[in-house]
Image (cartoon, rainbow, N blue to C red):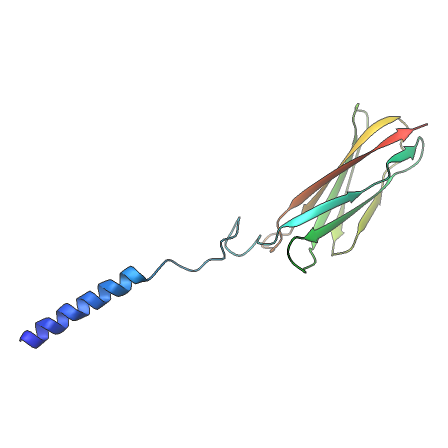
Length: 140
């Protein structure tokens, strides 16, 4: 009988020790979920510094994965607005790892223009959305 009680006591201690020693479930510790959205991206906007009045501006966007050799894929949305108001341009294009370029409509008003480019990764992608900006001036 003593051997049975000793064996039960030992089994209880071993089980308690194993329960204490085990941790939680494994995770990649990435946001927003455990596995999607782990690779940070950087969106770079390349635009001319000056555009002649009545001409179109060509704006190019590249997206790089930070600390990784992966090529991001998703969509790039380019928005161009005039600082003083009166002009708005928006274009969305698919992005598959190479530079994406868009041309605005003809720019008739002089002044400063602001460019906002957003990279939007598809749902359940390993890439995180990112934003970039730039600007140019329209002169006569």
